[in-house]
Image (cartoon, rainbow over all chains, first blue to last red):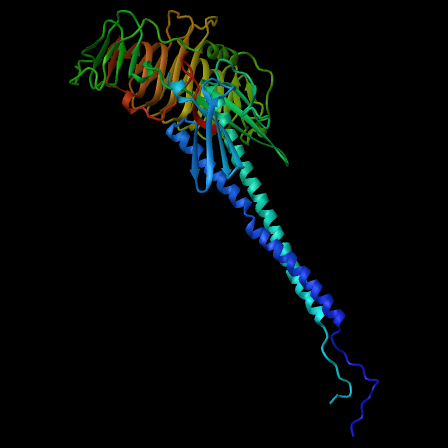
Length: 122
Length: 421
């Protein structure tokens, strides 16, 4: 005949402990996934860096080719608006303004004074 | 069946907490990564903007009129965040430009400064091999003399001559160039520069400690001055914004390391074997001994004011096998009986310009241009005026990257000769 000691306490996982653990795990994983997605998905720094480099490249090309034209270009999913106007600082200088947009959002702006070679040649 | 003391593992909370800590650490790392990338971008962006502002400042500086010679501030792009302060002044026969660029950012103000030596384009007359000013005089050439490039000459033109019993050996009078008509006087010199050089010879009271000059003195700092009755420069390292001034004589020995400085005295002697880059300004004589190498952009200037009571002939002498890269300028505001003379000895080479409103005695070679009011030739047998013998004046061998000094009135200062510290 088997005797059972009714005073013996079984150490087991209580329902409360399980619930607390689940809540903690859910919150932790939730926040983790949110942050991870935010870091991965929100690549604004990469976009800004690319936009900055494109603006630099366009400025360099314009000066190299002496291409003093107001124009809008589509480069690598960006819209690049290039403008020239006489600088108020000096007669022989032009103010080059390059705005890089993604959709309607302005990403970066580039300013530079460049020699107005047409004036100098005169 | 139950054991006597049965124990079931029930540490789920501990495991969950451990996993949470790991996840929190990863989240922290990701957030840090994002902020580091953001900071990196800001730094990258600011550096590019500052670089562009510096380039814009340089353009403003090159465009600025040398005659203005003052400090001006500009709002670069009319947005009040990017500003530049530029200044232009003479440093010897070249222009010295400095710029101080500022940019306002969210983190604060960032700045950059630069200084540079400036010059200009060669005038049309300077692109020729010879500019001999005068009315009716003629140029006579003999021996192995070779003039390559255009020659601006008075009405008398160019002729061959027998000098020391030797005839002209060339088959053409002028190679790769034409004879053009010169004017009675040399092209006008820059009056503002002449006034500045006059001021160089005025007494200076300040004096810097020689030991403090062992480090290069930046052109963004005030000029340091060494002065005395006679100055003997020996075993020194002088670089940058430094003026050496003596009432009487300055002697520069071969074992100095000198770059960019100005030397002012009544007489200057550069001893044999010296190598460096400097500008010399004297009132009476400048002697460059043999085997001296004055690298570009150097200047040798002898400047005789009209008020000076100097009876001796002002002389610039370039010793045998010496090299001068830059400009030699002898200027007499009032011509006396004894005209000044530039003597270029055998095997000496001038790479650049010789400007002299006196005589030039060329026995060496000039790669560039000589502009003068007369040539002088002294041989064992005789002396000749406006004669060239066994010499080479070649305008085509002037380095295409040679940037002109600003001695002549029309010369702008829109080209960078070198960046300075």
